[in-house]
Length: 125
Image (tube, rainbow, N blue to C red; front, side):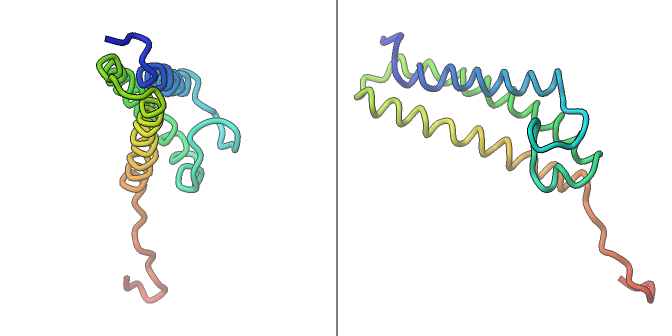
């Protein structure tokens, strides 16, 4: 067992950073729509309700996926592969949690703030 596995050392601290960012964002969410801090996409910045919903939802997802990433990092202790391969695998393993935060948050915003079709002047959809 290699306790200083490159896979573990790549994935573990990165997962902690993702989880810490989620915790920090849930504890200190941005109050107003801005372009510097928080979950920022076109959908999340559409209005104040979407903004606050997206901040809360994405923070929870970051915390959850960051902790899951940390939980799988000890698998590196049992890998006996080339260190470069382990680092590359660790970096590749970071992609799904980050993509999942965005995809699930965008989907949740769409579901929460579904837009109905506008009614034209004749009153018919």
